[in-house]
Length: 222
Ligand code: G3P
Image: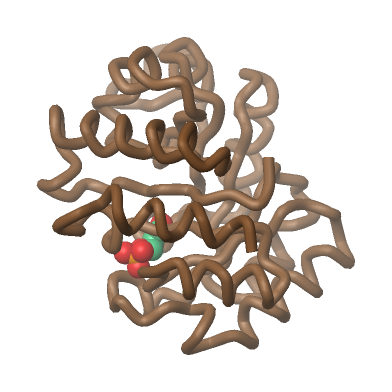
């Protein structure tokens, strides 16, 4: 599955409803064209529709840490699986959850048969999460999120150190994110030892999202 590009569509106006679906179709086309492994995480309300429309892996942006039952408003791992998704992001800097809930959510995801992509805002947090054996870890320094300045250029140490520390604990793919905006940023991330990137605004808000993603996907090949 690696190297990979994970696209978090967040809750942007540009990624709601039909526009979100169109972005996911672009991601699918670029994945087919380049052979790149691309994951999309559309808005949760669009999961069923997107998962039924595209053949690339669809992840939720978050799941709650409860099983199915009388939990109004809850997004369960099982429902996400039934919607046709292959995984979920968890603990994004914009949707933090305490460690006990992280553990529960990872277990619920495993039980439901979906993958977990855990976000960490520091090397320290990545080291705390790694023993819980998620399927992926993505390190994203919050101050660079949405900045357009790539973590792989502005803070290469956090990428290198997270890769080193996580792989000492558990050999899982480590992604990096925050400000990743071009093929060059992706290349740099891979040079630092990352197994891929997690990004949002550079794709979602681009005038030409296909061109940006194509550049990034081609950079995965080295
Ligand atoms: O989940 C990806 C994200 O937080 C990074 O956002 O807009 O800097 O690519 P962005």
